Length: 523
Image (spheres, rainbow, N blue to C red):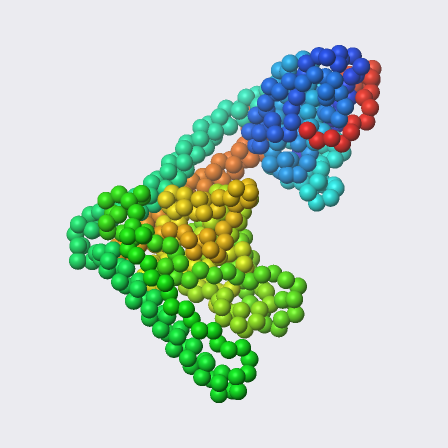
């Protein structure tokens, strides 16, 4: 054909392979052992498949998909199809294996290389096409067999198929080696990031700085005196405001609710907050305090239908906006608020936001610092806010919370005997955090800002190389299926002759015993 290289032709998949071929199950002994392949046994993107599970044929006779060695399994359900759960069936325990009903089975005809067929349907271009022709309800969409049957590909002669596959696999092996090196580098970066954060809060990162700047250090007693003074000043300001509001209340005839008198903060001892558990030699220089001693912890806005009726609207952050040391502000929603709620929940520069709960214990307590990039921003109740009193640097607190030491504290607070893992305002208020002199906090933040920015830049370049590797794979496949990857050999049997022979073979085949309609049971 005019759009094909010499010796090639175009053919729909239904002409070069059997799709979901039937098996004469009556010929198989119910007690015989067969390989079993659930969806989880096929690895995404790699083509790897585990056929080590063995079941009796009687256990899989009904409700499972049959296949044999050399067949290509294609996951038809979302998101498995989009993720690339596609594989060639290797040697099995017996002639036939069985697996999830969410697989389509493609059995190549004589003269069609299984590996060529695999690459024809595993590439991103075909999966994109299949995704846009799925049917069914959201979350249960599937690729109909008809999409596979009608999909036409460029078909080269059998020998050229083998040469193409050999070249693809050689090039992919080179890419795989490069990708593995990138993975090693990324793992190393992750370990270095954690080691850097750990050293910061063990005092090793600023050991030289402390030796050169003894005049900028503060003793634990001095830090405690600063905390007491700040707490007293805050209490006095609240008390003065209460007296003013109470006087105004009396002048207005005592209408409305009487202002609540603030409570004087309870005192705490130096010894109760010192710990050598994590700080070693720094236990006599740094303090170990709860967040509640260093600022205010509060909740956010609950979502309700009544809020839609409120005339005042405000932008608010959700769990989806807060990641570890990162804010994603691409999608910001609005919520109805009262003026009093807006005043209480409005975020200010430097507020820390903790994710209250998540299905994974590793994701609970994700924390980021608000950067005041959007004015009048509030937050939902599933984000817990900590606002420092000024003695604790917000970024110093953030870096501690994402360090191995901080993460250990957060997961310990979130642990629950009921199996549910969540944080609460009181749990966040009880999180311990180290406190050192403001000058040392600033030095630690400066060093971490510089080094972590360099790490992020390197990691972004590695991620870009992952993308380039995948783009290169797709480029190789595009060349392969357009006849540009290997040269044509005029001595090869033309693909049109191969296709005619496949059609003739199909016409002479005697249909085998039909199976009953498979039940919709997913392994």
